[in-house]
Image 1 (tube, one colour):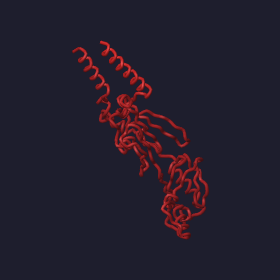
Image 2: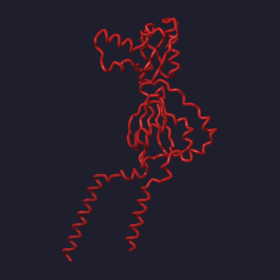
Image 3: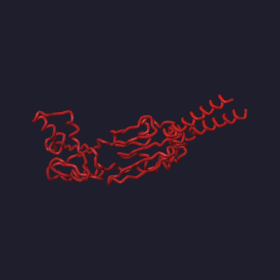
Image 4: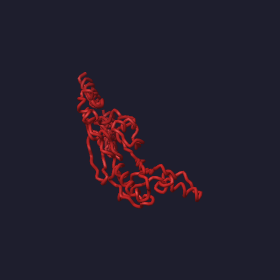
Length: 269
């Protein structure tokens, strides 16, 4: 009876230890208690800057369409394709600008431009100053868009992957939602955010999704190429533990020896 009771207690302790505490499951606990003044004081996220490897769409427009046509890569490629009869499905993609490792792009007529580390407004001003009034009599409108604003979500989520944003912004909870939310075994209080700046320098930040103050954090709004890693909690780590093959063989051998010894003892009685 005593042995059965001991076994039952041990089983219960293992079960309780493997369960995730319910208090660690909700996000932004007591967020409604944050004072409105604190929410109003949240500064806007710094505008996205251009990194090496970014893919940009830059459109120069004006009332005089013919005048700005040479400054639009898509128009130039389309005209060449029509002339040579070589239009392909990759034409739209080839009209984008790929920022090289040194932060440069090759712009029609103007030539090479160093835009690494610049914001969209800064690129707008740079291109405008290069073509007006040197090439145009009217000040053009320059529109710059990121075509590869994306973040990666990996670890204990239902659908790990890379997720793009058409409007060039994404919050950490939007990224998590796109990844199908955290698994119950995901460690909500210690999520890792890996960020790379325009100079290629990486930084690591730890975020607590339970903490209401995350809303006030500068990491609530993500930047392009951010990586979110959700670590497994202790329960998940224990459940994934496997017995090494060598130990399995050893235990099997010991079991065989015990069986033989038991058989010998039984025969000799």
